[in-house]
Image (cartoon, rainbow, N blue to C red; front, side):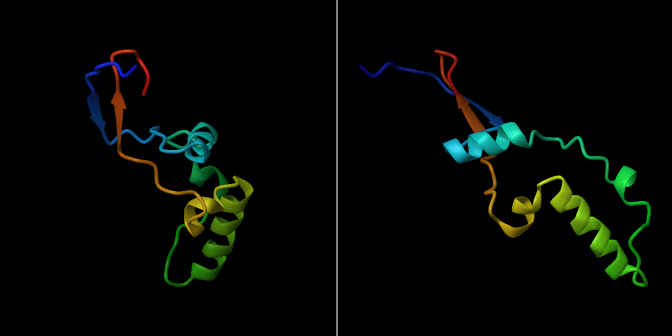
Length: 89
């Protein structure tokens, strides 16, 4: 049986999931991130220190297991979710 539903679109909501793997990633990486980069990287990027900054930044990204956002293994989540009358998204 297919029930009628009304949908509500919420724009720019990054916790939407489009597949089970995306649902897992959304649960593992809630937005906004709780990582404060300034706590891990004390140098500011400049044209003179790019290689040092890059090394530190990649270390942070890999240490937080967020490389998938950089290399594309974690796909972009949809920017809208539909909420139905039965409360399911």
